[in-house]
Length: 259
Image 1 (cartoon, rainbow, N blue to C red):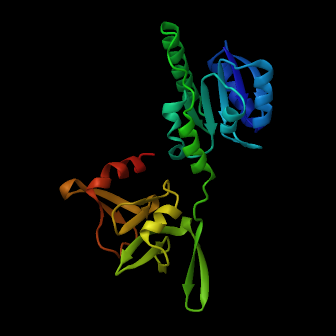
Image 2 (spheres, helix red, strand yellow):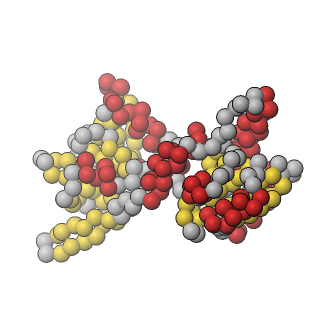
Image 3 (cartoon, one colour):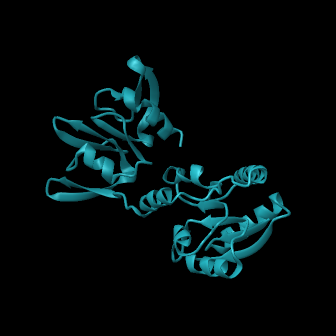
């Protein structure tokens, strides 16, 4: 099995190669590239391997560009330090993705998927090659390049204070105004609606449970089953009314908690 590694961090590449050799002794690491350009150069010279490991963030761009600039007609396993939420599309559109630091058990599972595909390919020569879907790549490219709001400027009398999102527990509406509560239990008025905050904040960190409230995972003390198939969330410093996850958002809320 000929394998290509595309990884710009030498230590990460060395560790991945060591894990591959341990789990797949028959694997032949035929090449290592450290950038989009060097990967394309290698592919143009040697052709496609049987399997490629692609780090998403490379020194000269995202590895998605490899698919645009040169043909890569082989199964792909993505490696990345990014949160799985941002990369959920790859579960269906590649062999697998692995979050760094790569665990041996996860890599073993990825190889199992690869061999399962090989088996189906041998039984049916027309079996589809598990290449990433271009639209999925584009959606994820936008997610990775997007800059979410990192802090909020708060006015206290004549003074201005910047509050990092890491210090915010939740946002809520009250009498047509929007407030936030910090990890210190302080409450501040903000100049954004919850609809605007949904666009500005990283959805991996904040979740809007209903029309009036948006919270961060760290704000939750407890979750209780409630009437009407809803959930009641007990919050830190809960000066607001009951925090109820609306019925239509319960499944999505559970999925958010389980990431």
